[in-house]
Length: 200
Image 1: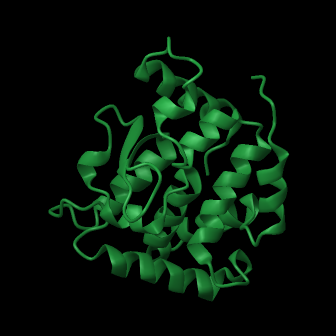
Image 2: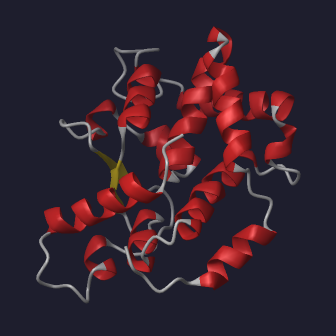
Image 3: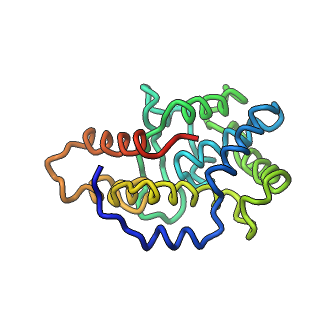
């Protein structure tokens, strides 16, 4: 894949307090060994592999997972540049999402009827067993920014990065390729992640 690399965001992120790939991987591995930590591990995995804001995660519904399990339909909450995104997801993230919903399968919300409690509990666990994630106390933001750094480090095309981070709509990101259909645009995003950004 060839692309002009934008080094400014990359350098900016390197100066920030961003959780490392290895730290996130080790945390998830620890959670997989302890049933009491598995919810936290799944939440961290989803954020690390999608860059989702915690508020968007709280509002996710099980029906937001595409029927073929390859995409996640995200409606942004709050004041964001783009209201809706269709994000590529892969096997581990897909499994984590379904495992989270299995905690309370009767709820339409993916995190159950008390999503804020689930997320706050995850932050508490991060503070207790993974203090290296964020010295400034921005625990989930540190994980989300790690996803952004991984995109830039993998030299993912800037238009794909902007879309994945919700900075532009799909049409805006691919405005120089009007001949592409929406399906083709999403496939380009999916292939970029699949081949160059390993899933946690």
